[in-house]
Each structure stands twice: as C-alpha cells, then as structure tokens.
Length: 130
Image (cartoon, rainbow, N blue to C red; front, side, top):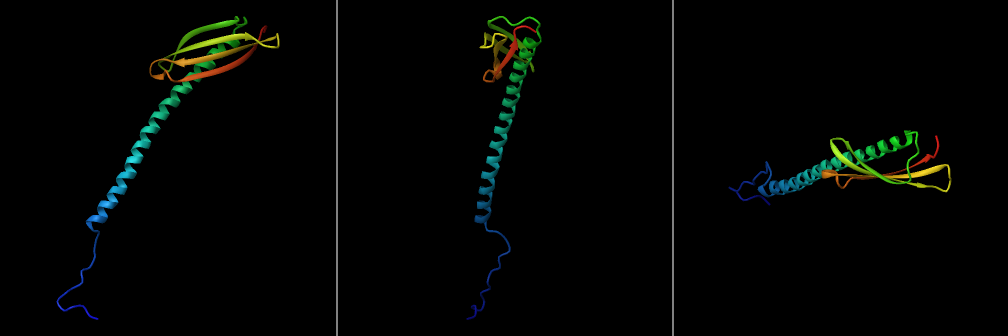
C-alpha cells in the first residue's frame, strides 16, 4: 500500500516535549540526591573533626598521667582543656587493680558548645612506682 498522495510522512528530527520533561525530572531527582549527599558529607566531616579532637584531649591527659613521676591519686580528678579552639571537659577516675603494682585510670572527655555531643573514653594502666 502506498501513502495517500498529498500526505507526506513527518520525519522525527528531535525529542518531543514530553521526552524532555521526563529527562529533566529524572535529572532533577538525581541532582537533589547529590545535594543532600553533599550536605550529609559536610556534617559528617565536621563531626569527625570534633571526635578526633576529643580523642586528642584524652591522649594528652593520658600522657600527662603517664609521664608524671608521682603516681595518680585514687579517685576522680577533672579539668578543662582548650584544643582546636574549643573547650573540652575531662574526668580521670583512678582505681586499684588486682595487681598491686598497677593502677587503672579511665579518662572521659566531653566537648562543650557545638561539640557537646562529641565524647571520647580511654583507659590506661600505670605502675604505682616508676
């Protein structure tokens, strides 16, 4: 069968409006997901930085306890440190162990302000006499 004379079959040389709108909708969903992922990544990086600062404060307190020639006193001591431009509160709890030659110290660090949710815990053992 032939086409009717006078009717010319249209050629498709591009996309229809509907195809373009569907493609834009798919692209916008992907772009929105990427923007949300970027925001989550930035928050995670900030949280990781605060957590590493809390661990650094805990290690600094541990080094002070281990390098002090006098053994730590039994019980709880606390203090504040400034590290990374933020204040950190620490508590060191020292108690005897089963071995009379050693004492155990648990160090807990908590941030203040924006880093209030960041915490670190560290346990060290130290000889009573050095």
